[in-house]
Each structure stands twice: as structure tokens, then as C-alpha cells.
Amino acid sequence: MTVTLPADEARRIILRAQGLLGADARRGGAGATLRRLGAVQLDTISVLARSHELVAYARLGAVGRGKVERAYWDVPPRAFEYWCHAACILPLDDWPLYAFRRRAYRERKYRWHEVPPVVDKVLEQVRESGPVTTTELGGAKNGGAWWDWSDSKIAIEWLLDTGQVVCTRRVGWRRVYDLAERAVPAHLLGQDLSDAECVARLARTAGRALGVATRADLVDFLRLKAPHSALLDAALLDGSAGLAPVRVEGWTGRSEQAWADPAALETPPRGRHRTTLLSPFDSLVWDRPRTARVFGFDHRLEAYVPRDKRVHGYFTMPLLASGRLIGRVDPAREGSTLVARQIGLEPGITPGRAAEPLAESLREAAGWVGCDDVRVERVDPALGRALAALIP
Image 1 (tube, rainbow, N blue to C red):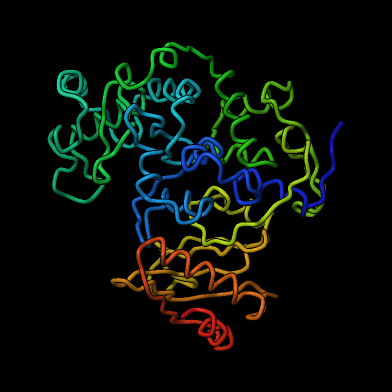
Image 2 (image 1 turned 180 degrees about the horizontal axis):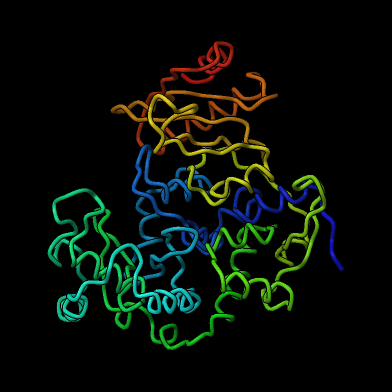
């Protein structure tokens, strides 16, 4: 039987699944957050902090940044880096589930660059000297533009794609590569899952992390292409993905077919909503069509948009309050001051409603990154006055 969910109920289930509603989300710290989310996206941009740190902060509050780093890159390893929704930190227990993608890269024999002849030499260098960074392999670039990778860099990334080496930690934001046979426990390394088994189990992981999702949401989470998306369809229909069919009232204007974690349907989502700023790469909002469908929020990252064409700012962070996305902040840091360069509210959100959660989120974020002052720049005058009264 297909359950029909009101849109608000689906939204609360999604927030709980994402660790942003209820007390359970804080248990187990950053390591449990990674397991709950299934994937935490990485990105080079760092404003208040790097995105993977912001993801943990959004759920746990002012958790020590060292604890976050250790949850991702510890010894012995508990996570590894690989391609999911994008370049992501993934629970090490999920290593066998990405065999389908490693096989696909091996068969393709090409991704961004032609695989150079030195690949065997680089693999032997890792075998003899690893763990190693790209610098220790001879450097990442040829001296030209950022994509002008050296042969050593191309080779080591190819070995990472195909699973011969793995990254389970970073040093100063540099990947540290080692042989998969040394870094991945034997009981995980020895599992040999078919493509269909990989996709079915990953669909279950994605469905659990998303709470309620359409087929398109699941495809986007895992970035599946044909023929792997066809394997997803089969897993959803035959039940091997372990997700229950549901319909959500009002999604895309009709009761669209969706899928839910059965455990999420057993108890109604209750508890305290998290008030927080979100990384633009947070899995709650990383899928723009889904964010519009669930929250009615047009989420855009403008970091790569020319400055004069930006509407909301360079690294605009959505503001989550009472389970809704009610505004956005473009933050920066100047010494010990957190600067809100621009603040915007969603249509229908009044300054009186937004001021308190905005002030709370700015104060908490400032304290977390070691700032002792907050300065607000571009803002609606009425909201600015309300914030001035709330932020010392």
C-alpha cells in the first residue's frame, strides 16, 4: 500500500532524517552525523570554515573543529573520500558499495585527462613509500592553469578513481594517498558486490539520509547515469532498495510518486528544530529542484558568478529556522569580526519573525569560529534595527 503524506509531514521527516529535528541528531557527534547523512560533500571554498565542517556544525552546534576533523580523517580510518553526489567524505563501511563506480572508471579508461604511461610507476611509488601526498609524488601542476595537472597528479587521481589507492586522511587540506589494501580493512576489501547490489544498497543509504525522496532525488544524491539509473529503477520496484513507496501532496503540483525510509514512517517527527546557517553544499539543500519542492526556496551558489551579477552574495548560506528556510546570509570574516555582508529574507517573512533566529545563528556562528563581534552590512533597515537590539 502506498502511504500519502502531507507536504509538511514529508518536510519534517526530511529534517529529522538530516539530523536537523529532534534530540537524536546530536548523539554520537560528528562520526554519527556522517553515518546518518551517508555522504558529506567536500569543497575548496572556505569562508567561515570549510563546507564539511559547516555540515557538522549545522547539526551539532559549536562542536570542536578538531572533533569534526578526527571524525572524518582519523587513524585508524573511519571514512574515505570518493565520488558520490560530488567529491565526498563517506563512511569507510560503505567502501564495497562503490565497486560499481570503480569498475566503470576502469572500463572507461578516461575521466578528465588521458591516463599517462607513468601510472604504474606512481602506483609502485605509493607501494614503496606510502602514504604520500601529491607533493611527494612530484607535484600537482605543470605550472600552467589550475587544470594543467602533472602526469603524477593525473595518475594518482586515476588510481583513486579505480580503487587501487584510497584517501582516508588529509594534511593541510592535501590528500594523503595509500594503497587500498593497506588502508581498507580486509573484510571490506574482500567483498565483491555486483553493480545491482551496489546500487540497491546505496539507494537504501540515500533514502535513509533523505527521509523522503523522488527517483530524481535519489539519482542526484548518487549521481547515477545509465545503465546504473536503470538498476535503481529495478531496485525500487522489486523492493531490494528497502524503500517504501509514498505520495506527497503538492509536490510538483500533484501527488508524485516518492520513496521513504520505512523506519522514518513508523513514528511522527517531533522535537526541537535546529536554528542554523547552512553551507550551500549541505545535503539538505545541495539539490536545487528538491530544495524548491520541499521548502519553496530558490537556492543558488553564486561563488562562480561574476561579482556584478550576484544577487545574494559570494557564499550565501540559507537560514534554517522552525523547519523552514526563511532567509540567507552572505558571511565573511575580518579578524575577530563575523561580517554579514548581505542579509535577505524570503517573501512573506517579516523582520519581526526573522530577527531572533538570525541573531541567534549569527552569534553562535561567530563564537564557533572564534569571533567576538558581529557586523551587519547590507540589510533591510527594519531588520537591521531589530538585529542591533539583539546582537551586543
